[in-house]
Length: 101
Image (cartoon, rainbow, N blue to C red; front, side, top):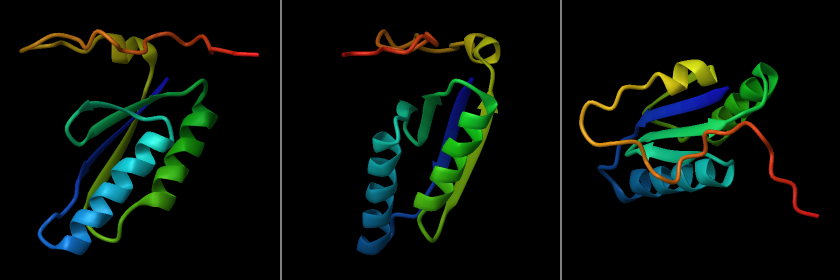
């Protein structure tokens, strides 16, 4: 499964820009990868993991702006049509976990 987070945050003031940067940095710390500007995606192993990841996004949200979360299956994610451009080459599309001992 994938959790997609799409956001439109205000950046008019220095405080808003700082909140935007902090939110984006926290998304990356949580394991999200940028699909395109303001659209991030995370690979999760189960619906429960997706809900927990969504709750973590809710905890790091800035005070203003619009944030949307969408949980989709791998089959739905694989059906994305690229109308212009192409799929990123360094895309994680495997549900196997990497374990380094």
